[in-house]
Length: 215
Image (tube, rainbow, N blue to C red; front, side, top):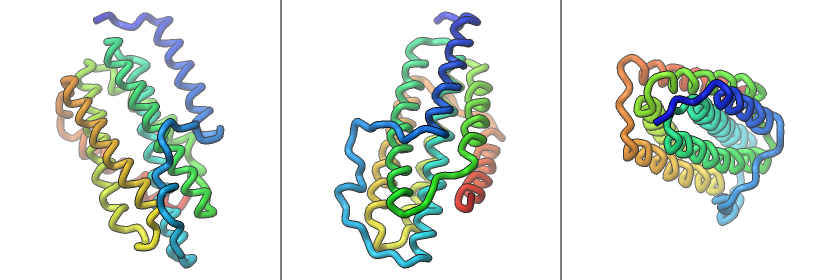
């Protein structure tokens, strides 16, 4: 295991900046898998249901912005090449979720969060800080992040309007993918995060959800 050289770190941080611009200001990235929403019929939503579904999908879009930024920040300072590759793969997979959520928001005639650059910057910084410890602790952030995302996706599946089968299909696939991400990180030797880190992550996520539903 080799410590990343300053030149490597600078190059990775520059790559993170480029990814931030693409994620927050550019079009949604292309995806390898078919959007799960395409296989479902468009349900009849009244205006209240449409706004509610859009608010939930905006939260999930922000969640994918944050997860992608977190993993890129961790990858920038990862010590082990295999760990870095794992984190970059996870970030790419979150980009796929990002595209699905963006497409669903467009279909609902709504928009992504106006604060996406702020969400990305903050999460990238947290990821970089998480990686200052050892790689196993960094992978612990992956596990905790994904488990918390799983929980709020489960809640959103219950809160979606009953007729919104398209949004439900997207969130169900995302939930399955997030569980797989957590399992893979655990298999790589992730260590549990010490108290109060999980509680602080939960509190920050609650603030994000409250704001992103509206802005």
